[in-house]
Image (tube, rainbow, N blue to C red):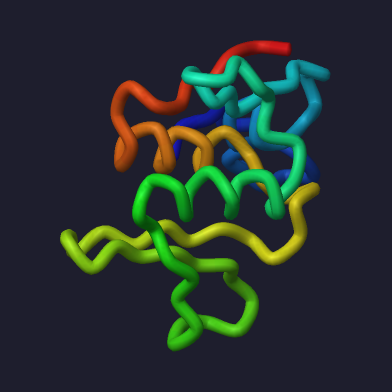
Length: 106
């Protein structure tokens, strides 16, 4: 994790990257490259991931929405609430699905 150290009330705090904290107003979007469609919900993301061979994984943490592939050891873990779906999770999906997704500024 990266960020900026800030001095508040006599204590140093690490403020996470601006796109994670939302303080910059900068929005990121996950784009499905073959269709050009912006992923705007977990139902859409789940459909795309299923088409790529990913399956829902129900044995994990109850506060996470997870996917796995039988052909790999990879696991995609996402927050249950789509409003918490930040660029960190988007880049994880891009890394595990090269040439299928892209993260871009909105």
